[in-house]
Image 1 (cartoon, protein in one colour):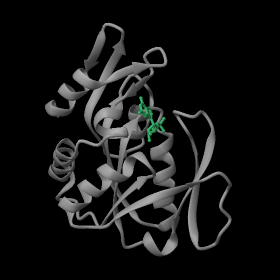
Image 2 (cartoon, helix red, strand yellow; image 1 turned 60 degrees about the vertical axis):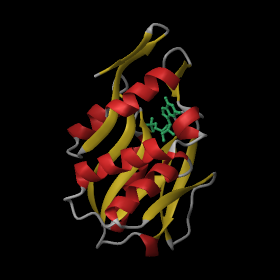
Image 3 (cartoon, helix red, strand yellow; image 1 turned 90 degrees about the horizontal axis):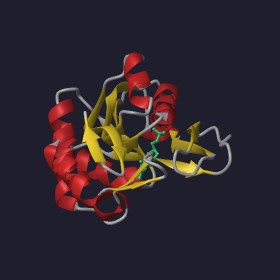
Image 4 (cartoon, rainbow, N blue to C red; image 1 turned 90 degrees about the vertical axis):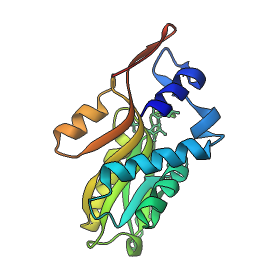
Length: 190
Ligand code: 5GP
């Protein structure tokens, strides 16, 4: 999506020796609603014919884009809540995720009543790196017996392995901007 790539080029900041992209000025802290809205529309163009009944994301950064996307599908947005401890509550589906940005494992959970076997789920997230966040969300979908339609991410760092691995497992993954490489000299998109 050209508007997103252009914005990443002008406002993105590269950190941690070229492994982390900061886009706090329009997606991860301050949110540009017009751009996020266009991203939601694009996800709808890609997945709108799939009979999606629920958008699933993970708190906190995914919530904004998930809500803006959900309005095009006219379905609810559900966000997995994070917890420090493993959840043994029988009323919830839960999974473990290795945090890319914090380097530690955390639990995620959704209430069973909000994700059911009748749901057709589109997962939405801001970034795809090693794929741990998507793995955790897909695990929740599995536990619910729901149907996974696919995953839409705003930014895929294609030089990291998550996207290739998850696509190889048969899941449809669509990224609005795919970064081939990034360093002090700039950002190259796929
Ligand atoms: P993964 O689980 O695929 O390794 O990483 C995806 C999650 O980590 C996303 O939910 C996102 O919050 C965070 N993340 C991964 N890479 C980046 C990055 O380069 N920049 C930012 N801002 N977040 C990232």
